[in-house]
Length: 236
Length: 290
Ligand SMILES: Nc1ncnc2c1ncn2[C@@H]1O[C@H](COP(=O)(O)OP(=O)(O)O)[C@@H](O)[C@H]1O
Ligand SMILES: [Mg+2]
Image 1 (cartoon, protein in one colour):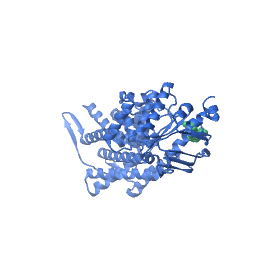
Image 2 (cartoon, helix red, strand yellow; image 1 turned 45 degrees about the vertical axis):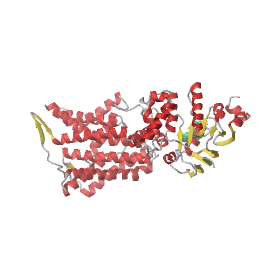
Image 3 (spheres, protein in one colour; image 1 turned 60 degrees about the vertical axis):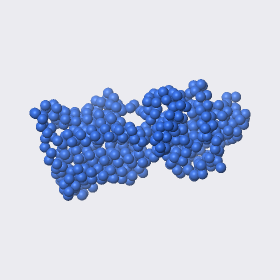
Image 4 (cartoon, rainbow over the protein chains, first blue to last red; image 1 turned 180 degrees about the horizontal axis):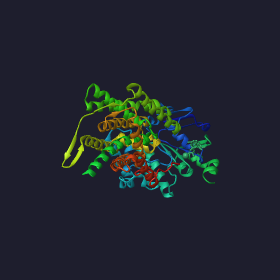
């Protein structure tokens, strides 16, 4: 059984239909990527899966639970986390406090403290800046913080919405390394990216989203080799 | 000596404003709405103190009952009147809040009549040190307010719920992604704000025993002004703004030439501060999210 099963998902903004019935699945242990141009509906998909945007049709099954109408905070408690588009770290809180917020769904205080130490080990920059106000971090550091914060809840499924956006090429490589690490440590990943080349290279499977519909799917390698994808998303 | 007395008076008026302003600012920060009915919750608290004093005669019990009643009232107002409007236009929410304000005032008038009630909370007298004379009620007001403000600051900074409040006020969506139940946080915020309103009612009745259904109207507007002066949404801002308003008021009242215009002078302070710092003394210049 798939960890995440999205069936015929439909989302509207007012009268405009942003998702026209999309279906896909993510199996345990996979990295699955949705690629698509600006405005294709990638963020809408991510936000409606985790309950931030109401859906008008279709269903979302996560880890055996029908979460189609479940409020966001409960979905998080079920083991899903998201690094949202634009990172949305808490600018006025310190690095440490942001990580504490990430552990909000955990009840064991000392376990949360240990998890934070683990994040500092994995991202030494965050450890060095633990008492700094997060709004003053660089873009790369903020992305690390957003990813560390999301991992604080020990998610079974991590949704990443354009984690490489606005980062220098070196940092982009670093971000993709981290995503692979997360997967190797047992977290299933659903990734949304405009950087199709790099994301297809680390993906087990991928889907192409165009104007609110899935138009193509396959393994990462298959899509990277497809003419349609090459032409539209890989610049050749 | 006279100056110290004026200053203490200002601090006690100001800390009452600050306690009210905290309710405005926290609700604004978290629910992003102006709770116009907040001042009237003070008035309801006042009537609870009146009822307790008339029947049992214990001011501390009166305060306790007022706090409990106001907490239940504030949370109920939010559930019944504001929650269904979540996501509606700010104007619709504001008009609803004004409606709730009139509802509370009219209900109080129907129940208690329009003639003011005298509520002598306690005859406390004055503390005299040399030539310095300070009424005890001022010291009680100041002492309670300091404890409340310190406790609230620690609560927000060091408890899970407090930090969740900061997170919700900064980014509701991101807070939900942390697993925070935003509705629960809004309920807690209304509970705290309304409980504080009851304290403010108690302070006001200690100062002046006359109670009517408009008890909370002017202090409510002044405390809202204080919250804006301090930077709406900012907890320390509400404290600073409230104290500043109180001191301006106390000083202005001692100068015969301007004393009659004290209210106007306080609002003038608002205008001047907003001209210099449009987001208030401690308010953040918010970047719009893309
Ligand atoms: N809050 C909103 N209100 C109205 N339309 C929106 C809103 N958010 C997104 N849209 C529209 O929905 C479509 C999909 O947007 P989005 O999911 O953000 O795309 P992507 O993440 O793939 O760039 C776009 O046409 C966009 O203009
Ligand atoms: Mg997007």
